Length: 510
Image (cartoon, rainbow, N blue to C red; front, top):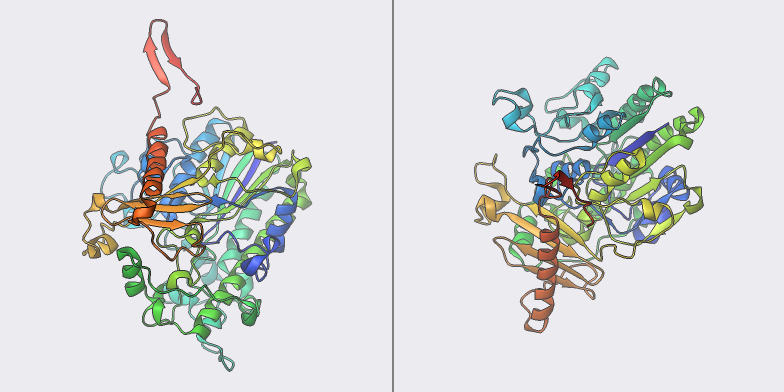
């Protein structure tokens, strides 16, 4: 049997895994994911290649860099000509199931302007069979809550406001409050149950399920008792840092509001007190713990049915979370906490490599070719590479020595152009590309000054770009970005050539 479970969390940073230890891992309660790490291979230097949600999921589910698929912000259409993971799975004879969401906007050339999918920031990627779709409005979940007698407020996000009956203990803030929704009715519980129900009737079939959770995405609030899971005194504060000397960093510090992260928040994130920051960080780990518990329910189902021995399990996230680093929350900018995400892969055929940890640089575009190889699907032109050699205990000698990351600042829906408008950037100047390796982070903007962090700047706070002593290094890093972009320029048909004898197809590695 061929079964693939792709679990995708939203905004789960790479170091928030208990088995990893360290300042963050030591407060992360993740027994279910820790158990997966013991069964499989953990990639400790894994990065999403773009952010936020829509672009990240487009890259993961096409195996392509944002420079190729060009779905660069939430709501940007995904070109219909690219092969997606669900379409490739169908071609391999495997049923692709979706519980949750993909944040996909359809290609407008395949429909008309009155298509209702254009009234949402994201819809279901074509090819998936939606089991319990999230969409932008969580209709399935809201119907579940209403059926259980929960009043649905307007706006809906007030479901995640603090419980009005909760009184903060001395020294605590409302950021530590429990959610009004009980744990057994949380969105994590709802989507997990939907996934289990869908799999109960498919035990004798091949399937690929994308289980895409909305947590630990803000608003940062957890149901009781998970809101109190972590002792706030044990949660480390973020490294002290002021706004970095760069236009984008300064703009984010001056404009990022609390409301997007805590429903009761007023003012800027920069105005949060130390007590509130501690409570928010502790709540984040409570959310991580609650989601881990629900993932454990699903893994227990697979074990009880015997499917665990036939299922490739992939656990990752679409992007990370700053958690107060650089004076910010969210997934902004180019910093590691925004782009480094967990990746754990359990191949039931590879018990000999159980517990292995891989430090090589891996990217979210590697997930699709790994799954397709496991399914025995025909290879297609992708920017990522299969991680199967690592699952087998090997390390390819020609593996990449750094990652390329991208983000875009445009917002065509905003009347003032959003961040790009505030920084006086034209839409086509709003892109940025990042090179990250063991020694450097180099950020090249189309319309803003570059950024360079060196190895001694562990918290990525000092911009060394423009330093005459580092001019040669800066040129070298810019060259690495150019090399990567040349090598991965869109090439869907470049491996074909017509001539005497007909059409020839060459290996992408040739």
